[in-house]
Every structure is written in C-alpha cells, then in structure tokens.
Image (cartoon, rainbow, N blue to C red; front, side, top):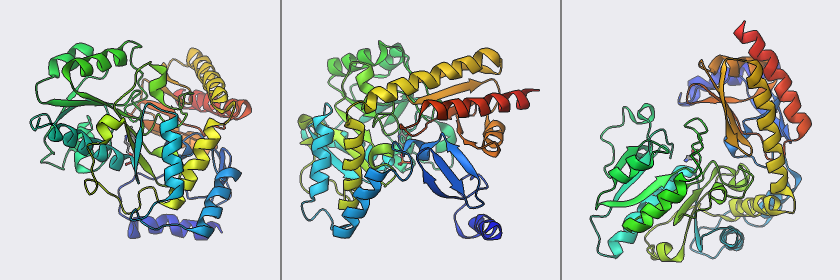
Length: 400
Ligand SMILES: *Cc1c(COP(=O)(O)O)cnc(C)c1O
C-alpha cells in the first residue's frame, strides 16, 4: 500500500499541471472531521476542503441524497426543468434577500455571472458607461480573466496582462477611499463581507452599512462575494446577516453542495430580470446531482439548532485560540467569526502547516502569515481541544 501511494504522489508532477503547491500526501477517505491518507495516517481536518465541506466527510444525509439522485438522473442540461434545481433555488431565496438564483459550477463562475449581470443591468437602462466595478485590495474573487481583474492581489494577476478593463481596487475597510473612488462610471461595489483568502479580515461593524448607503445614494449595485463566508460558516446562513445589510447580488459556491462542484448567483428580481433567455447559461449549472446535494446540505444547515451550534463552536474555537495567543508571542492577532478563524503570526506560517500536518492536523496558511481554520461546521468541542493541544505543542517546538 505504502509503495502504491508513493507512486501516485510522485506521478502527479509528471501527469498533472503543476499549478498547486500540494502537500506530499494523498487523502483517500474520511468520516466527519477526520480524513485518512493512503498510508493509513489519520488527520483532523481543519481545512474542510477549503470551506467546501460544511457537513464534513461522508455525512449520511449528503451521501444518501447523492446516491439516490445518481440512481435517478445525474444530468440533463438546462434545456429542461430540473426539480432539485428549483428546490434549491426556492430554499436559497426563501432564506435570503434574493428573489432568484442562477446556478453554475464554481465561485469564479458565479462572480463572472455577477459581473455580466451588473453590466447588463445598466446596459438595459441605456447607461452604457456605467460598467466599472470597485473591488477591494487583498480580495479574492477567482482565477478567470474577469475575476482576476476583480481580485485585488497582484501576486495572482501578474503574468496575465493585459487585465480586463473595468475594475479598480481600494483598501478594504476604508470608507473614505471607497467614496473617493466612485465616478459616474461606477456600476457596482464587489466585496467579500469577510475577506477569506486575504487573511480572514473582518470590517468594522459600521463599514458595510455605510457601503450599502453609498451604493444607494450613487445608484450603484452592491455585490457580496460569499463564496467562502456563506452557507453557515459565520454562524448565520450568510455573513451579511451579521452586519445588518443586504446586497443586490450575492455569489455562493464552496460549501453550497458539500463538496460537489456548484456555484450560485443570487439577486433581487429588479436586478435578475436583466438576464433574459439566452443572455447567460451553463451546461452543467444546477444539474440534478449537484442540486440534490445542495438541497441536502442546505436542509441540514437550516435544521433546528445547527447554526446555533456553529455559533457556539465558533466562539469556543476563538476562545481557545485566544488562550494560545496569550501564551505564544509569535501570534499577533486572532481574527474571525464563527467557524472561519485565523491566527496571524509574526512570521510566515508555511512551516507550521507542515509540522501540524505531520502531527495529525490539517490547517492552511493564507496571506503568508495567517494560519486559517475552516473546519467542517459539525466540528465538536473535543475535536477543537485535540487540535489546540497539537497546535500548542507545534508552536512551542517551532519557536524554540
Ligand atoms: C474560493 C473563492 C472564490 C473562487 O472560487 P472557485 O470555486 O475556486 O472558482 C471566489 N471568491 C471567494 C471569496 C473565494 O473564497
């Protein structure tokens, strides 16, 4: 067994594009918050498929929904009506600001849809010069050409010039800078309510309400990219609920179908109506299999007590991380909300990720110094305790 896994891991760079800095292990099975690699080592999973596994691994409700749907119908295309897609749209709109949903296959694709919808919305009104979208420095919106242009981090954009026009970036959380950046071309502000890849950054409580008001005053749209923060991650179904503001457009992906690829674009009728038949489409988007998975995940997250438990576990994780921070000077800050948390270190965290993995815990490093925790939302107190014990040992080892 050990030999076979070695072969796969080393064969990767020969057969697969070398686009990822992969850890030198291959995960082959999982249950709950635990995963196993091909050599039989077990890990506590605090990456959770990069926030794409809210129900953890092999959750019986999700597995059953996928198997039952696969036996009936996996794919038909959007030439036909798709019952699970309609059910998922009804659940999403019934529990958010939105009136309608469009389904695609990833976060980047959902954001592409949001950008296209914004342009079409103003185009329909004869305001053709209202196409510009202001996004945030340090943001992450995806890897397609338009979403790269939207992404406010040069490390992702360099080498892919010319960048698609129509975007500018201002510092996240800086209201005055945003106000100054508005022009008569500004069609929308696109923003993550909490920056995820940017290092888990939470804005001051009055920032997003002020951004909402500014957009209203200027006749521009507000787009929330909740690809990472949606689906219960913050303890509310959507992160915007924590800030008392609603967007005109919202994008979702990661956790939406528990790891089955899916993306969604949500909007109010006023905005969604700009897309007429033929304006936007996806072959796979919202297919029966992915939608059935989405319905199962969303139903579970909406079940009684689920989100309350996320709040409790998020608060517990945060307080345990704060305890660790009090003992370890290398931690500059603990940041997060619900079950998206990070400790910001005064050094790069890549080595700590490696030692954590070798000690049986999967975490990842974002924005160089932020050790990020995105456990499945079903994580328990004892799971958190176990992770914290290992984290303390690793920090002690690494810093002496
Ligand atoms: C991950 C992420 C994306 C991109 O999603 P993909 O499915 O990788 O295309 C976009 N926005 C945010 C906020 C994300 O975290």
